[in-house]
Structures are given as C-alpha cells and as structure tokens.
Image (cartoon, rainbow, N blue to C red; front, side):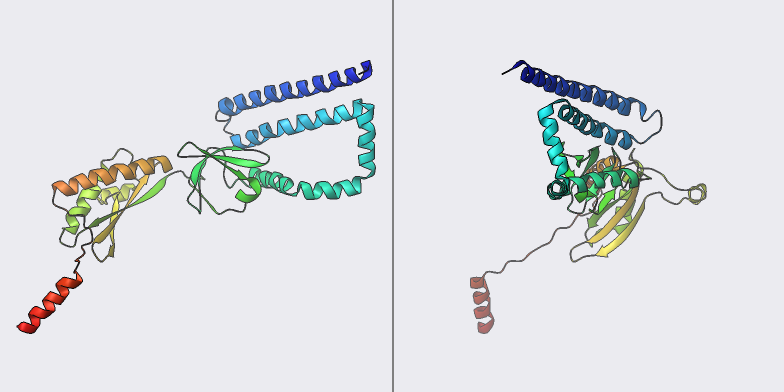
Length: 289
C-alpha cells in the first residue's frame, strides 16, 4: 500500500469522523433548543424536530460528495456515473421510490400538521399513543404500554386518525352503566351524577345562566332498554385524553360501590338449562296426569 493510498484512507476517515461528530453536536443542540425554548417562544416543536432529523442526511451527503471529489479514482467513477445519469436515474428512481414517498409525505405532514409532536392520536385499528418524533422517513409514536410504534410517513399520511390534542384537548368522556329493571332509575342517575360531579378531574363547562338555573353539569341519559338491563350514559367533560381514562376508571369503581350500598342492582343475564332426560320425565308425568 503506497503513501498516496494511505493519505486517501486517512482523508476518508477524517471526513467521516467530522461528519459523525458534527451530526451529533448539531442534533444535541437542536434537541436542547426544542426541549427548552420551543414552549418559551410559543413555536411548534415539530418543525425543529424535522430539521434535527434532516441534519444527519445533509451532512453525510455533503461528506460523501466531498470524498468523491477529493479522490481521483472515485471522481472518475462519479464522472462515469454522471455520464450514464439517464440509466442511473431510472435505477435509483425505482430503488428509492418508497423512500422518496416517505420524505415527501413527511414534508406534507410538517406543512399541513394533521398532528404534531406530543399530540395524542389514535388509528382505526385501535392503536393509540403520543407522537414522539417525526423523521424524514417515519413517525415514532409512544403507546400507553411504553412501546414505540414506527410508521412510514407515506402510510400514516393516508391513515384516518383521531387527534385528541388538536385545537382543544378537552374530552367529553361517555361512560355507560347498566341497572336492572327492578332498580330505581332516578336514584341510579343521582348516584352517578353525584360521584361524577365531586371527582376532581371533572370540568364544569356551564354558563352563568345555566348555573343560575341549577342545570347539572353532568348530563346522564337513558340510552337503551336492553334484554336484561336499563342502560345509562354519563357525559363528563375533562381536561385531556389521559385524565379521561383515569376519570372513567375511578367512576366505574366508585359508582359500583355506591350501587352496592344503596341497593341498585347491576344485572347479568340468567340462563335456564333443561337436560333432555328431565324433559322426557316431565312429558311422561304430563301423560299420566
């Protein structure tokens, strides 16, 4: 190995090392800026996150171009590739079609903002979580089991999603309760309303006029007369998606305890099983009588 080859190897090693170090430093600075200053400046951190994830791509691309131009052997290869750019464009076009679609979709997400970082979103298949990061290729979502869902931008941009954080984070949680036909409906409604209204996560959204008219701020309606039960639904406003879940869990427990104390029955279906042998014995008895 001659001295010139060794110099080229050193050049490549130094260039890539600088690219790696520069990428790490810039990503660290941008991460610090996003976490500390985005809220103070009242700007959307999604924009900065996308730029942060583009930094590495731009730096490494620049480093590779620099290496090609500095090493004669690679430069001649680059010239040959450029001469056959038409064929190369077709090959690269097919190879990078999905990658390019993800990048374009990521830019569209950045511009149109159907969701942003830290938004709570849900998909039609039931997957739900918080948007943690939007990169050039994919979006990372942290679900409520602390796992990461990684979805390509081209796919998520075509998905139907429920965004619980866009514009207004408040949630009107619908909680259903079932009571037996023998139970007192008005008493059950009073218990549910009392438990909901005294819960610290419940929000009172009534106007001054509604308060003056003593309108309850938790609305409860009879929604169905089922085969085994009378079904009630409570409409309760709370601050966000996470609190809505906690509120529901707490009320299911407290309302059940109040129902048990005050004689409100939560029904369950009854089944009568008749064995074939017993049926024949009954038929014989009927014939004798």
